[in-house]
Image 1 (tube, rainbow, N blue to C red):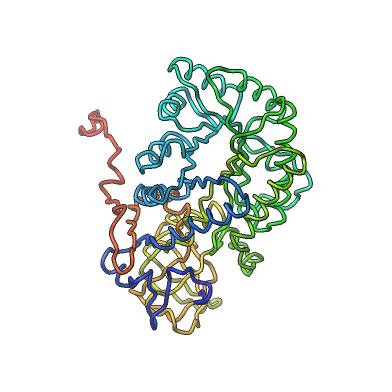
Image 2 (tube, one colour):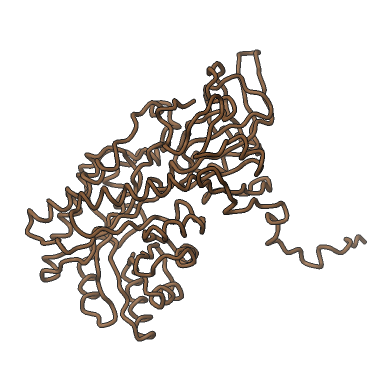
Length: 466
């Protein structure tokens, strides 16, 4: 269970009933069916605005917030953020199309990705979005396409930082690799030995404009001290590159994403992480990243007063803005050879993919018994033939078939990662605005799940046996 004091602002309790803004969660489950993703419009706007304000204060200069669409690719939510003036971090052709379809201004779009082909680069150049270069061959392709189109492509180099003193391990991955090493062995970014030459090539080209430098840490720790060390290492590399490129000053520096959401489920599936303190405020992260970077660059004599600071948050914008709602289908209680309880839900771990990919452990509430005493320890399990332990060791009130369970803080990555194992159709998403709710992504049908399948005619004819 989760205490009311830790709930996102969009969630309130009225007696036993959990509400998202002015909507009863059990009533939403009855109206739209379950499983169901429920997003709070007010929370999403509030999260994004607060991040922008925090980094504008910490950088004391121009700031762009490019919300990572990979965290949640709903076109309605992207349109909401575009309405607020936020840019978009995209990875690959589908996300680029989604960002533009969602009304994002092209100059506020960053095209990232490790393996961009000629067609995608041409699309980006034609649209006028900025391209984050990941390798030397990619820069060559980009220049060729810009020349063919008679345009100048605005590019940034994605760099790797060598930070051997950062010996902590990732809370998300759990593979034991120190992050100082992890930044170097991950597939992303230009190899460090190629960066200087690649930058010179970009600067010299009449078809390329080297607008800035990009580095992305990702969600590995909640410790602001680690972020300060990353910002210091980033500043040192920017100074080195400026000297190598005859005093080059970037128009923009992009620090990527990786900020935790306020509900912060990442890594908590490990029992030793279950009671980890809540993460610091977004203002504390802004100070650790933007202020540290700015001060470090100023001390080194690099004037960045006109440089745009960019950040690409995903989970910290979307995460706390949503709940995933499921209905209880079954209750099992074993007493032999030891006592154990399972609550079977009509959802699955595969609709909550962060529990698999990022070892997430979500706070939960029984939405129609939210104020009742928690007396059972149970495994909340899903309906696939996998082990499907969505939340092991949850502490809940006495639950019965038909009750509604809400997983808190599921707005980032879960819907984007959801899968059709066992042929399960993926759930609908509704957007709540005050006391109203509307579908922004319909539920799949079984026909949808198999709509891509084609059976060759020869396999539909009766088999011939001779």
